[in-house]
Length: 204
Image 1: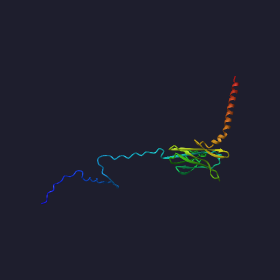
Image 2: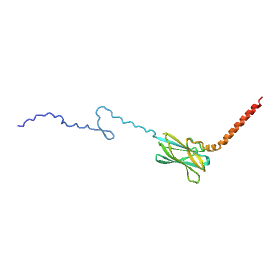
Image 3: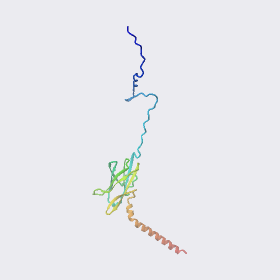
Image 4: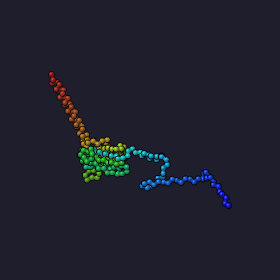
């Protein structure tokens, strides 16, 4: 006779862990585990824009007198490690440029740069380009920057100096004749004053 075996109660702590819930397929591929409860998934952190990012336009202005002897001018621009050749013109093709006023202009648009290296050259007929200026320029404005130069004579040659704004091309020639204009102005004033005094003396 086989003895009966009494049913034993389950022993606590020895239960097998529950199996993970099955995953649900996502349309378009991949699997997503089932979400328990009603908690919403955490929102992704917002991205932060970098100040100064985006497109930056640099305008170039070169004021040159007609006596400089150069037909055209161009810039070798180094911006964020890349070299660019910028040709300057005085034919009115650039916006806000008056044709043949002696101000050669050009522009370049690219990613924001706080510093650029600029080398200005003048080209005369049948001659090699002449280096007129070389330097590192600050371009802090994130939208638009204006860099200007003015040609001046030193000894027998011309060189370019930085200017806060480009003046009309004949400004150098006006400076040469400025003393004569002042002399004529003072002469006219003196003649007018003498005529006024003479007229008062003739009055009864």
